[in-house]
Each structure stands twice: as C-alpha cells, then as structure tokens.
Image (tube, rainbow, N blue to C red; front, side, top):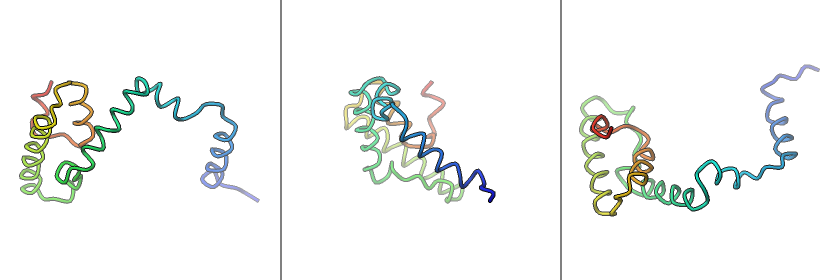
Length: 111
C-alpha cells in the first residue's frame, strides 16, 4: 500500500503537535513582543475588521476606476479613523495599516 505525502502530512503534523512541549499561546506572545502587545495588536485588528469600509478586501474584483475610487474612500476612512480614534502612536498606526491588507494611495508618503 502506497501512501502519498499529501495524505500522510496531516497525520504526521498532528502527531508532532501532540508530542510537542511548546504551548502556542506562549510562543505567540514571545514572537509578538509580549502578552500586552499581542492583545493590543488583536484589539487594533478587530477595529479594522468591524469597520464597514476598511474591512473590504475585494479590490481585485473591481475594475481600474472602481479600485481608484474605492482606494480614495478607503484612504479617507483610514485617516479619519486615526484622527477620531486618537491613534497617535506610530506602532498602533502601523498595525492598523497592515490590517487593511493592501496598500493605500499614499503609501509612498509614509516612509
């Protein structure tokens, strides 16, 4: 009986995870600069996910004109969110920007 790797891989991965002594929550906190920073990152990502305009990621399904117009709308709402939410910390702004999932029209000016 020949077992293909694609069928065997999930079983091997499950076995390795069961035998592992590393807790994913602890590892995530270490990789994300601590528990408080990770909680803050999740909180900021949820702000974007709850926003009706900023959570839209369907840019590739729009034509050029629609992408341009929606990009302007998204940029406006991003700046408005920063102002209204009082997000003055550059790290918070970067987390929010990355949560958008795509660059905005003024990305070159953020450098």
